[in-house]
Amino acid sequence: SALRAQADAMLVQARARLSPGQGRQRVDFISLALRGRKVGFDKIITLIDELVATLKKEQTDDDHKKEYCAVQFDESDDKKKSLERSLDDLATFIAETKDGIATAAEEIKALQDGIIALDKSVAEATEQRKEENAEYKDLMANNGAAKEVILFAKNRLQKFYNPKMHKAPPKAELSREDRIFVNNGGTPPPTEAPGGIAGTGISVGLVQLAASTSSSKVAPPPPPETMEAYTKKSEESNGVMAMMDLLVKDLDKEMTEAETQEKVSQEDYEKTMADSAEKRAQDSKSLNDKEAAKADMQSSLEESVDEQKSTTKEHMATMKYIQELHAECDWLLQYFDVRKQARADEIDSLGKAKAVLSGADYSLLQRASLSRSRKFLRQV
Image 1 (cartoon, one colour):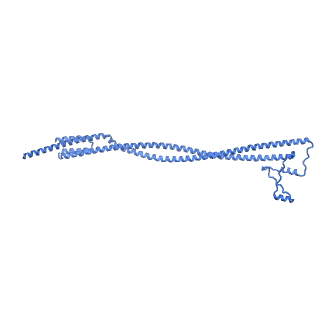
Image 2 (tube, rainbow, N blue to C red):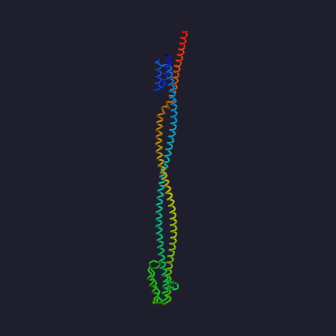
Image 3 (cartoon, rainbow, N blue to C red):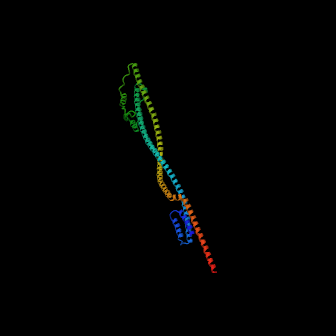
């Protein structure tokens, strides 16, 4: 009875160290069996051994759980940090890519505007060159016609006032048929009237009239009666022809300057066109390159945005798992040492109770052996 009471006290101590639940129920069951006196010590010792084994298994499970929680926390934290770094890198890359796309768009717009402006300048320069060339041709035609008219008039004056300086018009060349016809006594064909001087449209009627008059039988007017009058008239004609020479010289100078200016302008225009063509080719290549680069950046941006979304989802899932891990492990990690110590104390108390009961069994065995010996001796 005293041994049962001592063992029960140790069980009560062990029960006090246990948390409410299955552990206490097992100790309560052993205590009831011990107090009921219907169960032998061997059965109770077996129950104690089973409870000790259970407590050790629970501690082993807690050790494994603690190790699992520590590993999972480390892995989850590493994964969370890695995902956060990836999100930071993606955010930086997306921002830089957007800036690059905006810059490329501005550069593309500038190149397009530049090409349009260049084409407009080329068209304006071409139109201006055409106008300058047309003006040059008009100037050369008009000055050439004026020069021929002046020289023609001067030649006519030379015929009357300085016959030695007069230049007769070239004889008309007859065709082979006309020469045969004339050689056989025929009349030469009439000379066709010119359509104008140097193609200017200026009528040569007066020139033809003067020529017909000079070739007719009508004699020219009589010469001046005195040498003084002739000399005066000759001086006047010389003054007129000097003025004609001055006019021709001015026309030649203006035509030479115009020809030089036309040549320089044409060279400048051709150089400008060559430079413009080269610049347009370079700008067009740059435009194509920048449009391709912009397309690549746009594609990279879309891929990065998709990756950012998936990484964000993965980060949220990792954070949720960490929360679940905290809910699963925080209590265990917080009270692990306390629970471990409580189990150790409980096992110690159960061991002491078992030792008491084991000692009781041994003393009972000794008493039973002594009783049998005494009974045997009486019989002898």
